[in-house]
Image 1 (cartoon, rainbow, N blue to C red):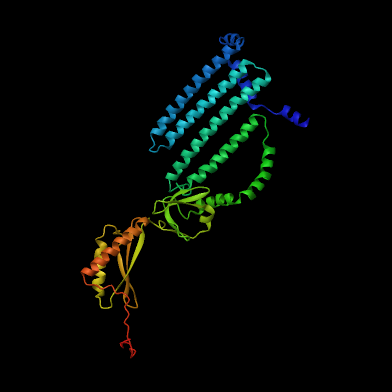
Image 2 (image 1 turned 90 degrees about the vertical axis):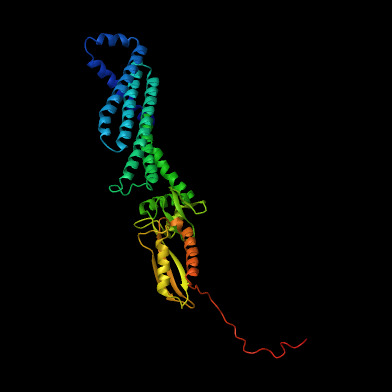
Length: 387
């Protein structure tokens, strides 16, 4: 009985709004039009059709005015954000006016209370769904606009858009469903309490999924890498980041194989971001050894000239040659140079080694290798005796 009494006392907002608007329209009509309105009330279907037609015309008129006035402002700006925003807002204005005219038309038809309430709630449901869709579009284009303005909005970037987009979708859809339930006279509070208990059970059952989910948020917040970065994991995977989702991160390796790694693994892994730092350029080091009899100045000049003439290597920073140590059979040195992209490291190293070997042969520079001499102290006396 208590539950039934509470349902009787629940307020039907849509019915009240439609009834109040219908009454206000009647009270504000001029004296010359009032008799026509009263005659139309005797024919509810004609009145409802007239209200829908007038609502459609007004909705189109306000939509056109909205686009015309604000469109002039949008044309003065360089970006596309305001143009897209005003288009969506004009459609929202059209939907709001048209659906309100449908509510007025239902009020004019004077159905029974049950049918009247159902139809009005149905129209309000369509209006709420329409507004949810437009809010989702506005959120999407807003995030994209903020991500392009990196100087003012550093947190909203291309890599963070998927997470923020999903979060805003959950909030908007959740709020919309809450209002939708209320419009149908359903109190979702008890459902939310039950969802909390169910959430605990689901949390234990899907702990791995939740771990990946939270790790995805932490990766976005900490930003050890972003889309397009070339990274190397402590487990040996190396590739370019092609996707950062709420569950996993995807790498495209040099073999054109896509590797999907759970975010919980990425969150605990040691990550070397080869695209990190002030630029995407990365340094390569070619280790080589020369004989102790070599002219070190000649070795230095030959390598440096070859590096400066190589189009695969960056001119800024300049290539360098550094002698590192006196080795067991050689003087060890390194050719250090910068390349534009980390994924070129293998191919360019291959070409440099071939060029160095060719140049050293042409200039008589020896690349020593380990040699061992065998001394025989004594031969056995019977080694050459006939058997």
